[in-house]
Length: 496
Image (cartoon, rainbow, N blue to C red):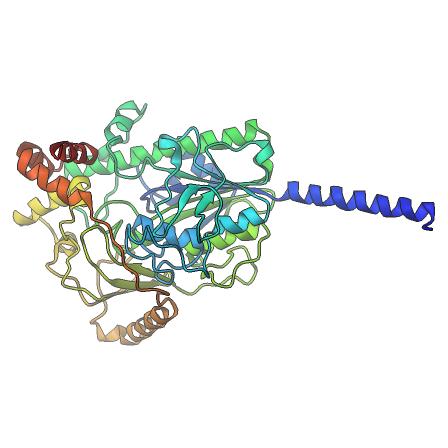
């Protein structure tokens, strides 16, 4: 018979182990991933003129700001697909925009929320207080917002919507900040702003014409950024009010670059280069600025690392706070976007950028229907070009075809205005970057060739506007946003 003191010791050890495990579980950090839509490095803390972002400034001052973070695709759904799996979108065959929505992920890959759930996290999508509830997913594989995941018959990514409470701890919440995405709300946000951005205060890139319409459009964009900065402040206040601020990691990024010339949809810097700020005072020294190269898939791996989850072997992302983290290049890809077939590949080291255009006959200004509704600068610059009023830098976007290869010295030419690919002085750099891109092509070869694109309703809506609302179309050509949603509704109504 076991002695009494031995029984007591065994019982005490069991209780200690039980409560120790409970304490450990409670000490796992909560994680909030704030994903602003269509945003380049356009925050005050990154030096953008004309905009005020006090909450994100504070987050950077008390956290870690990354200056060389790049997405792997400049369009929302391929970029988000990569981040949802921590794996490059080309490798998982999710690189064509709004495609393969009926196709399950290859069984070797899983959404990162699967691993968080296994580690005891409550996974939350959206937030009750942000514009539109912040529930966007937009992934190019079969999925559902809420429910379990086995990848065969169950495809749920999250456990619940909109609220994080103490009983959810440890929790992971992914919240989309939609305001900066082109939308019919831009004018309303500006009208309701207590201090709308003055178009005279903005600084336009050299590749954009200095025109009143373009300045106003840029100011409206910055108004949206100020709006979502308030949303960030609101979320931080909620953490404070609920007593969860001290043990919550907050990550802020863009899902791809700004929706404007050379931005969203293009492999130039404004399309791939995004803000990344990580706030966790409990573990990260405040005020750090990191200039090493980071891929958006590394953010996914970092979330798992914060949660003390082993990084799956299939992931192409790596935890950015691991002492051994080092990335030389980010590999970017541009493929199908709505009705525009494309194939371009790029790598950036933060110092050099190389782009290979496999379909150079497709121009940058491809007259994509969706963008016709949302890029006043394009319409104005087309008109200015016809009048002979664009300089050489501004004409680049309107070339009849793309160069087969592009090479840029980002230190001396951060706006990528001078293509060095045909300059013999840079032949060694060109060959190295060309070879590295080919290596990435092989590493990221798709696991499948299934290709199920969807028809873009924007094509039909634009044709309807041209035919049935010619006065609105003329307003569009003059640089006015006539409302994409309204046009789609009008087109659908015409079918009844």
